[in-house]
Amino acid sequence: MKQLGLLALCALTLLTTQGLSAADKDGWITLFDGSSLDGWKASENKESWSLKDGILTCNGERSHMFYVGKHAPFKNFELKVEVKAEKNSNSGIYFHTKYQEEGWPTKGFETQVNNTYVKDPKKTGSLYGVVNVTEQIIEDDEWWTQHVIVKGNTVTIKVNGKTTVEYTQPSDYVPPDKNFERKLGEGTFALQAHDPHSTVHYRSIKVKPLP
Image (cartoon, rainbow, N blue to C red; front, side, top):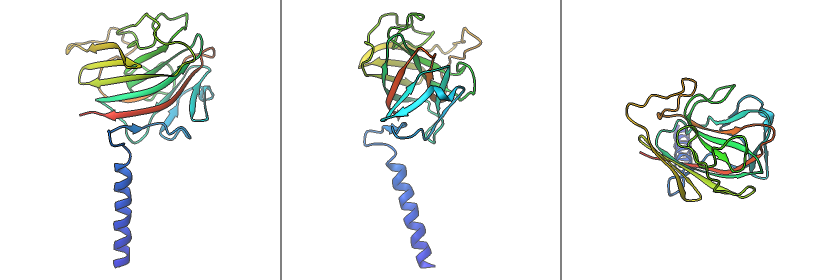
């Protein structure tokens, strides 16, 4: 019996240690380990996603890769994602969203990934459909960091440390488009495969939950 008690104590200690090690000393949690899609789930057209050499690439028909791991949902947080887009490519990073099998996500917000995609004037760093950036600030085929901060009713978006959006949602806000509930609350993250002509790469994805 004493031996069983000791084993149980060791197991509890291991679980506690693993839980603590989920975040680094600064509070950042890695959501994409670079070697698997553990904690992630693709919607329609799953073949639009590929993983090679630590890089998650989207190219193909519309699909969204949702984070469905144990750390979700997220309310207040900092999110940092390393991104590289090829010429004339479109993608996006969603937050406060919810998994859905088909269509463009109807819940939450999208921060745009688009440097030279000609069909949409909303450029990288936009809070899509809410605060739009029309100036190209990132070159194609270069890695950059997209940084999203949500605190209460305020969303800040930074691209390579430069603030592109500082948006505070009014307390009486009503989404103008009934098809897309762009309203702060809580939810998960998603990456977007936009179309067969767009190729975008993702690597480091990490989050720091905030009070």
